[in-house]
Structures are given as C-alpha cells and as structure tokens.
Length: 330
Image (cartoon, rainbow, N blue to C red; front, side, top):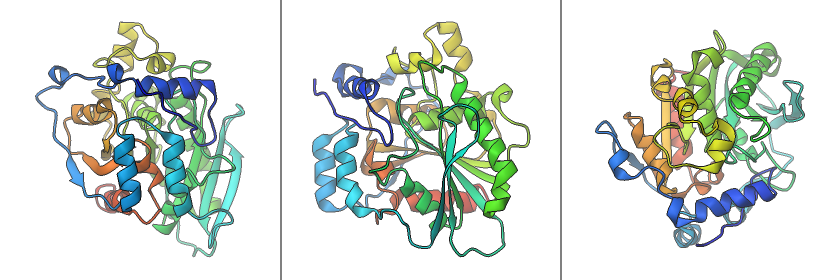
C-alpha cells in the first residue's frame, strides 16, 4: 500500500493525512464493484487532454492515488498570484455565525452595470477537511479567476466539516451562502437569480445533497445549473467508508434516506457531471450510476482536473463554459 501525502488548500492536518492514506489503499479504491452498476449506467464522453507533457507523464506515474501536495506543486507555477490583474477580490465575507462561514467574492475591476451570473464554488476535502484557499496556494482562486474571465461573478465558500458537523450541516451552509448571495451580490455586480453551483469531490457531493432533498433547499434559490466534478452521490451502493460515515452516519436506513439518488435527478436543475481518467474507480462509477450523459477528463487525476483550470489547460474550463451558456442558458 502506498500512503499518499496531502495538503488540501487551506486545510490539512491529521484528518487529511488519514483520508489520503485511505484512498491510497488499493483494497478500498473500488467502492462500487462492477456488478453493482445498474443497466442504466452510461459510459462517459471523453474530453481530450491538454496537459503539458511533463505534467502528464508525472500524473501517469502517480496514477489513481489522490496526491494533492505533489499535484499542487506541478500546477502552482502555471497560475498567477495575488494581486490579480483586472480582478477585484473581496475576502472573508461572513455568511453565518460559524468561524468557517466565510466566502470570497471575485469581480472584474472595470465592469459595466450589467448584472452577471454568479459562479459559487464548494471545495472538497473528504467531508472532514479543506478550505476555500490557503495563503501560499493559488487554489481555489484559480476557479474564481476562470469565472471572472468568462463573464461571471465568482464566489468561493468555506463550510463546516465532519465529524463535528455531520449531515446536513454542509447543505445548510450552502443554503446560507445562497441567502447571502441573494441579499448582497447585486452590490458586487452579480445576479442572484442566475447562479451556477459548482463543486469538486466532497463539494460536489454536498451540492448534490442540497439539490436532492427539497427540505434542505431554499425556495427560489436562483440556481440555474450545477457542475459536479468527481463527486459521490449514492450513499447506499457504496463500500463502508469512514469519511462518508463521519458525515452521513453509518446506519443503513439513514444512508438510504440521505442518498442524493434519485432526488438529484428530479431536482429540475441542469447537471454537468464529470470525473477524471485517473480518479479512484469509485468516482467514475458514481458518475455512471446517475444514468445521464457525463464526461471524463483524459489524462487527469482527482486533483489535477480542478487544479488545471485556468492554467492554460482549457479542457474542463471549455466544457463548463459550454454548459453554462447552453444547458444552463445563462
């Protein structure tokens, strides 16, 4: 077993290291064995790689291990650092009472008066770790810069974590962030009724849960589409996982009641679903479980797919841009 090293942007420590070691264990990588995939499972559409050759070779060597620190070191030199040209950044706006109820807003420095759609990003971290950014990292500011470059107002949130804050704390936090956006984003040039929710890994799972359960969702929340990258959606057809259980619990009846399926598919929100070729198998299998068209990023890993956005590798960015313009009709 290879133990991976990890420092999630803005969060880390023992919980994250244990999480990384868990996913590095080959005996637990395949969460959904093939016989559990339903007949409705679909094969993904491949998005061709745009990865620099040296990085692509190293990603192949790393394989399906979730290696955040090394992947970050590969991509960090390809991103700008603050202060960002022609972008105004508003840091650490409180959207609730908890110390983790903070968000950043990214807007064009010289924008006209036309309200822009809003791109809200929800970070990953295995339900127990992670942050919207760290002082020495360009991640996940890279997603915000991509949003501004594509005519959107970017909002990047931090939320409460398991095990201290189990289900549905993160969904309540997404709802609270949406309330803040609707109350405040017009002052920053955004349109609170044209919102894209985007999340990676646990962040994608949290968004899926928010959309899937009507009791957790705001009325008239302005969400016009959701971008879910390498998330876990079905809490029933899944091998026991201490990090999922830290958030969702381990009672079978609770897991069934808290699954994002089938509710996610009945939420009435256009979905963009993607995973990476070098994801641990469970992530691509979960995408296939949805039974709807989805994408796979050739040559990318669980971490590189999101760290690459804005680096000159436009594969995921172009696919997201097309989804926002066409499917979400913004």
